Amino acid sequence: DIVMTQSPEYLALSLGERATINCKSSRSVLYSYNNKNYLAWYQQTPGQPPKLLISWASTRESGVPDRFSGGGSGTDFTLTISSLQAEDVAVYYCQQYYQTPCSFGQGTKLEIK
Amino acid sequence: QVQLVESGGGVVQPGRSLTLSCAASGFIFDDYAMHWVRQAPGKGLEWVAVIWYDGSNKYYADSVKGRFTISKDFAKNTLFLQMDSLRAEDTGVYYCARTETGYYLAPFDYWGQGTLVTVSS
Image (cartoon, rainbow over all chains, first blue to last red; front, side, top):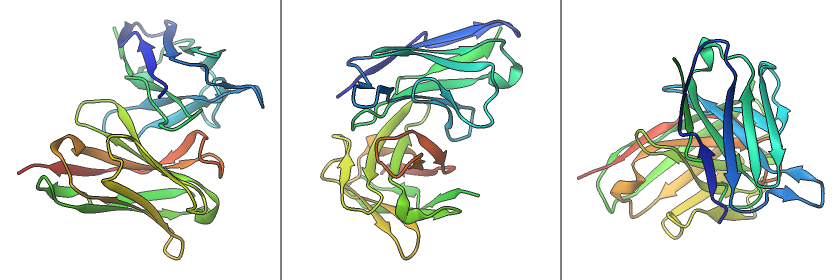
Protein backbone atom coordinates (compact mmCIF):
# COMPACT_ATOMS: atom_id res chain seq x y z
CA ASP A 1 0.00 0.00 0.00
CA ILE A 2 1.10 3.59 -0.65
CA VAL A 3 1.36 5.72 2.47
CA MET A 4 0.74 9.47 2.09
CA THR A 5 2.37 11.79 4.62
CA GLN A 6 1.47 15.46 4.85
CA SER A 7 3.30 18.27 6.60
CA PRO A 8 2.65 20.29 8.57
CA GLU A 9 -0.43 18.88 10.31
CA TYR A 10 -1.39 22.37 11.43
CA LEU A 11 -0.72 25.75 9.86
CA ALA A 12 -1.71 29.20 11.10
CA LEU A 13 -1.00 32.19 8.87
CA SER A 14 -2.15 35.77 8.47
CA LEU A 15 -4.47 36.94 5.72
CA GLY A 16 -2.57 37.55 2.51
CA GLU A 17 0.31 35.27 3.45
CA ARG A 18 1.48 32.36 1.32
CA ALA A 19 0.55 28.86 2.50
CA THR A 20 2.51 25.77 1.49
CA ILE A 21 1.41 22.24 2.32
CA ASN A 22 3.64 19.28 1.57
CA CYS A 23 2.68 15.73 0.68
CA LYS A 24 5.03 12.78 0.31
CA SER A 25 4.11 9.35 -1.01
CA SER A 26 5.91 6.17 0.03
CA ARG A 27 6.38 5.25 -3.61
CA SER A 28 6.18 7.12 -6.89
CA VAL A 29 2.69 7.93 -8.19
CA LEU A 30 4.04 8.96 -11.60
CA TYR A 31 2.72 6.59 -14.26
CA SER A 32 5.43 6.38 -16.92
CA TYR A 33 2.97 5.25 -19.62
CA ASN A 34 1.29 8.67 -19.74
CA ASN A 35 3.72 10.77 -17.65
CA LYS A 36 0.92 11.72 -15.25
CA ASN A 37 1.11 11.99 -11.48
CA TYR A 38 -1.91 10.29 -9.90
CA LEU A 39 -2.20 12.83 -7.10
CA ALA A 40 -5.11 15.03 -6.02
CA TRP A 41 -5.72 17.72 -3.42
CA TYR A 42 -9.03 18.19 -1.61
CA GLN A 43 -10.38 20.92 0.64
CA GLN A 44 -12.82 20.09 3.44
CA THR A 45 -14.61 22.76 5.45
CA PRO A 46 -16.48 21.85 8.67
CA GLY A 47 -19.63 19.82 8.08
CA GLN A 48 -19.01 19.55 4.36
CA PRO A 49 -17.75 16.79 2.08
CA PRO A 50 -14.31 17.13 0.53
CA LYS A 51 -14.03 19.28 -2.58
CA LEU A 52 -11.60 18.46 -5.38
CA LEU A 53 -9.19 21.36 -5.90
CA ILE A 54 -6.29 19.95 -7.89
CA SER A 55 -6.00 16.76 -9.94
CA TRP A 56 -3.04 15.12 -11.72
CA ALA A 57 -0.80 17.01 -9.24
CA SER A 58 -1.16 20.39 -10.93
CA THR A 59 -4.48 20.70 -12.82
CA ARG A 60 -6.77 23.18 -11.10
CA GLU A 61 -10.45 22.20 -11.22
CA SER A 62 -12.96 24.49 -12.88
CA GLY A 63 -14.06 27.27 -10.53
CA VAL A 64 -11.12 26.92 -8.14
CA PRO A 65 -9.46 30.31 -7.57
CA ASP A 66 -6.08 30.72 -9.23
CA ARG A 67 -4.41 31.44 -5.89
CA PHE A 68 -4.44 27.64 -5.47
CA SER A 69 -1.71 25.75 -7.29
CA GLY A 70 -0.23 22.28 -7.14
CA GLY A 71 3.26 21.11 -7.96
CA GLY A 72 5.72 18.28 -7.65
CA SER A 73 6.26 14.90 -9.24
CA GLY A 74 7.05 11.32 -8.33
CA THR A 75 6.90 11.21 -4.54
CA ASP A 76 6.98 14.86 -3.44
CA PHE A 77 4.13 17.30 -3.94
CA THR A 78 3.00 20.71 -2.73
CA LEU A 79 -0.22 22.66 -2.53
CA THR A 80 0.31 26.40 -2.48
CA ILE A 81 -2.16 29.15 -1.67
CA SER A 82 -0.52 32.33 -2.90
CA SER A 83 -2.46 34.81 -0.77
CA LEU A 84 -4.52 33.39 2.09
CA GLN A 85 -8.16 34.42 2.25
CA ALA A 86 -10.59 33.93 5.14
CA GLU A 87 -12.60 31.38 3.15
CA ASP A 88 -9.53 29.15 2.78
CA VAL A 89 -9.78 28.02 6.41
CA ALA A 90 -10.22 24.26 6.03
CA VAL A 91 -8.51 20.91 6.25
CA TYR A 92 -6.57 19.96 3.14
CA TYR A 93 -5.90 16.38 2.06
CA CYS A 94 -3.69 14.91 -0.60
CA GLN A 95 -4.67 11.59 -2.16
CA GLN A 96 -3.01 9.13 -4.47
CA TYR A 97 -5.18 7.29 -6.99
CA TYR A 98 -2.27 5.43 -8.61
CA GLN A 99 -3.46 2.18 -7.11
CA THR A 100 -5.98 0.81 -4.63
CA PRO A 101 -6.27 1.41 -1.77
CA CYS A 102 -6.58 5.06 -2.88
CA SER A 103 -4.94 6.46 0.23
CA PHE A 104 -5.23 9.95 1.70
CA GLY A 105 -2.77 11.96 3.72
CA GLN A 106 -3.68 12.61 7.34
CA GLY A 107 -4.75 16.18 6.57
CA THR A 108 -3.42 19.68 7.20
CA LYS A 109 -5.57 22.07 9.20
CA LEU A 110 -5.19 25.63 7.96
CA GLU A 111 -6.28 28.52 10.15
CA ILE A 112 -5.99 32.28 10.18
CA LYS A 113 -3.58 33.72 12.74
CA GLN B 1 -26.26 18.96 -12.36
CA VAL B 2 -24.49 16.02 -10.76
CA GLN B 3 -26.03 14.95 -7.46
CA LEU B 4 -25.13 12.16 -5.07
CA VAL B 5 -27.43 11.60 -2.11
CA GLU B 6 -26.54 9.05 0.54
CA SER B 7 -29.01 7.44 2.91
CA GLY B 8 -29.32 4.45 5.22
CA GLY B 9 -27.07 5.50 8.07
CA GLY B 10 -28.06 5.14 11.69
CA VAL B 11 -27.22 3.50 14.99
CA VAL B 12 -26.52 -0.23 14.85
CA GLN B 13 -25.21 -2.76 17.35
CA PRO B 14 -21.83 -4.43 16.88
CA GLY B 15 -22.07 -7.54 14.76
CA ARG B 16 -25.20 -6.38 12.95
CA SER B 17 -25.66 -5.30 9.32
CA LEU B 18 -26.56 -2.08 7.54
CA THR B 19 -26.93 -1.10 3.90
CA LEU B 20 -26.08 2.36 2.64
CA SER B 21 -27.47 3.82 -0.58
CA CYS B 22 -26.22 6.59 -2.83
CA ALA B 23 -28.75 7.89 -5.35
CA ALA B 24 -27.04 9.37 -8.40
CA SER B 25 -28.47 11.87 -10.87
CA GLY B 26 -27.34 14.40 -13.45
CA PHE B 27 -24.90 12.09 -15.23
CA ILE B 28 -24.81 8.71 -16.97
CA PHE B 29 -24.38 6.42 -13.97
CA ASP B 30 -23.38 3.46 -16.17
CA ASP B 31 -20.27 5.34 -17.39
CA TYR B 32 -18.53 6.07 -14.09
CA ALA B 33 -16.68 4.14 -11.45
CA MET B 34 -17.89 4.92 -7.94
CA HIS B 35 -16.17 4.90 -4.54
CA TRP B 36 -17.09 4.87 -0.86
CA VAL B 37 -14.94 6.90 1.52
CA ARG B 38 -15.48 7.18 5.27
CA GLN B 39 -14.45 9.58 8.01
CA ALA B 40 -14.41 8.67 11.69
CA PRO B 41 -15.48 11.48 14.04
CA GLY B 42 -12.78 14.16 14.13
CA LYS B 43 -10.46 12.08 11.94
CA GLY B 44 -9.21 12.01 8.37
CA LEU B 45 -10.51 10.39 5.22
CA GLU B 46 -10.29 6.63 4.68
CA TRP B 47 -10.95 5.03 1.32
CA VAL B 48 -13.33 2.05 1.64
CA ALA B 49 -14.20 0.52 -1.72
CA VAL B 50 -14.55 1.06 -5.47
CA ILE B 51 -16.68 -0.49 -8.19
CA TRP B 52 -15.91 -0.24 -11.90
CA TYR B 53 -18.25 1.65 -14.21
CA ASP B 54 -19.85 -1.62 -15.39
CA GLY B 55 -19.76 -3.36 -12.02
CA SER B 56 -17.31 -5.97 -13.30
CA ASN B 57 -14.61 -5.35 -10.69
CA LYS B 58 -14.61 -4.30 -7.06
CA TYR B 59 -11.78 -3.51 -4.67
CA TYR B 60 -11.86 -3.04 -0.90
CA ALA B 61 -9.73 -1.67 1.90
CA ASP B 62 -8.22 -4.44 4.00
CA SER B 63 -10.14 -3.11 7.02
CA VAL B 64 -13.50 -4.00 5.41
CA LYS B 65 -12.62 -6.85 3.05
CA GLY B 66 -14.89 -9.83 3.59
CA ARG B 67 -17.43 -7.76 5.56
CA PHE B 68 -18.51 -5.01 3.13
CA THR B 69 -19.91 -5.38 -0.39
CA ILE B 70 -20.17 -2.58 -2.94
CA SER B 71 -22.68 -2.82 -5.77
CA LYS B 72 -24.46 -0.78 -8.42
CA ASP B 73 -28.13 -0.96 -9.41
CA PHE B 74 -28.10 0.38 -12.96
CA ALA B 75 -31.89 0.46 -13.25
CA LYS B 76 -32.17 2.65 -10.16
CA ASN B 77 -28.98 4.68 -10.68
CA THR B 78 -28.00 3.78 -7.16
CA LEU B 79 -24.76 2.73 -5.49
CA PHE B 80 -24.91 0.49 -2.43
CA LEU B 81 -22.63 -0.51 0.40
CA GLN B 82 -23.73 -3.63 2.27
CA MET B 83 -21.97 -3.65 5.64
CA ASP B 84 -21.97 -6.86 7.69
CA SER B 85 -20.35 -7.79 11.00
CA LEU B 86 -20.08 -4.15 11.94
CA ARG B 87 -17.52 -3.05 14.51
CA ALA B 88 -17.17 0.06 16.65
CA GLU B 89 -14.29 1.20 14.44
CA ASP B 90 -16.67 1.34 11.45
CA THR B 91 -18.34 4.37 13.03
CA GLY B 92 -18.18 7.49 10.91
CA VAL B 93 -19.61 9.48 8.04
CA TYR B 94 -19.75 7.51 4.81
CA TYR B 95 -19.44 9.40 1.54
CA CYS B 96 -20.04 8.16 -1.97
CA ALA B 97 -17.91 9.76 -4.65
CA ARG B 98 -17.72 9.70 -8.42
CA THR B 99 -14.50 9.42 -10.38
CA GLU B 100 -13.72 12.16 -12.86
CA THR B 101 -13.63 9.63 -15.68
CA GLY B 102 -15.05 6.18 -16.18
CA TYR B 103 -11.79 4.63 -15.05
CA TYR B 104 -11.62 3.64 -11.41
CA LEU B 105 -8.21 5.23 -10.85
CA ALA B 106 -9.09 8.89 -11.29
CA PRO B 107 -9.75 11.91 -9.05
CA PHE B 108 -13.04 12.04 -7.12
CA ASP B 109 -14.80 15.02 -8.65
CA TYR B 110 -18.23 14.80 -6.98
CA TRP B 111 -19.08 13.77 -3.43
CA GLY B 112 -22.33 13.27 -1.60
CA GLN B 113 -23.08 14.99 1.70
CA GLY B 114 -22.50 11.77 3.63
CA THR B 115 -24.51 9.56 5.96
CA LEU B 116 -23.53 8.86 9.58
CA VAL B 117 -23.12 5.30 10.80
CA THR B 118 -22.74 4.72 14.53
CA VAL B 119 -21.86 1.24 15.74
CA SER B 120 -22.61 1.02 19.43
CA SER B 121 -24.32 -1.26 21.91
